[in-house]
Length: 436
Image (cartoon, rainbow, N blue to C red; front, side, top):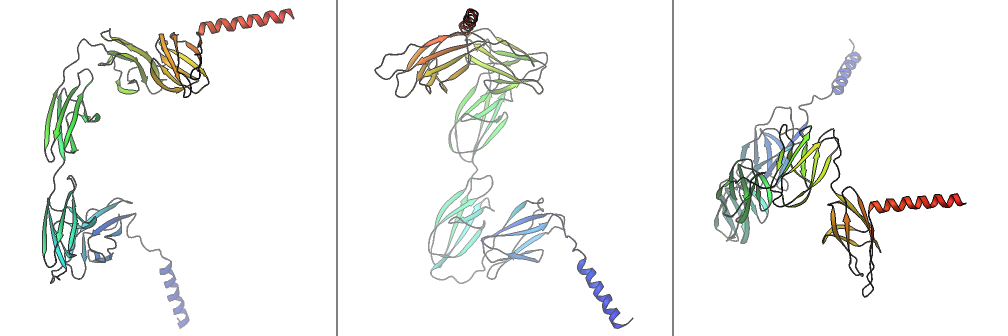
């Protein structure tokens, strides 16, 4: 083989090597966030250099399917080298924080700088000096200028500890922060499974431990359907736990709403609030309902919503709602269609603002006589009464008078009158056509 042929073979081999794709070391990427109190410190994974700390952090990307690194070491001239075990490699696209603290190698102090030695109970808390992260306790901060410094210590499950310390030149000040856990309340009940509320906010069901409470007074309420509510005010002290037990008393001889459906399993809502599901062979009880009108709505996948209204009367008989899912219940309420001249007046039904302005249709109104008031800036309030029938819409037209003017009499019509008027108009039109 001549010299040119040999050169061609070598060149071809090099081209093959260059064209071969580099073998992927791992797969998707994850990251270790290495936090350190010293900038420009060098970071090594199992002795392999990864970069330098900048702004207190270095993010190191690793392949999730590659052989995992075991240890991280951080070093810088003038500081003791720090090492720690790396946690497990996070999932692809995720990251994990690793905190490493470098302590300086002692050197003669100058007259205008001093040191702070900060320890905490428990140890391992994150230390911040004037809101700048320094490392994990215990830690020595050296070369600090004379003056006052704000120190904070943070640890999971504990309240942040905070204090101030004054640094004096040529000396070391020792600071100890004892971190405390927030107050907690352990709540049990008989029967169990009752809802627990803290300051009117539901947080869980008994048995339940309420954690992270600030010191001071808190209102605890335990409630369960069919039982009287249980309330107690407690004073929480940081770092302590209070045990509460609620003996719930059943409600007897109190009117309730009993709901069943065909098929069963429908979700029940009382005035828009979920209360439970209908059951086989028995009705679902809704007790401790305040007197007045209430909406009952049942929802079941594959069926239209079932909505009806019931009126609870104090010391009245129990109310039963039997819903045939897919059917429409007979109407139990009526509506009022209200217009005004001018329009845009606020509508009050029985002295309660409806949240609407004219023209407006108020639905779900119980049968009987009701009072209507309209209010509009720059006009006198206008008042009227109107009767409502179940399943019908009554119409009310009201005029608003300027201040000092004569009140305008409202006009109203029931659905039946409207129908008669319409029929009469049609009959009159037919007669006129015949005459022509």
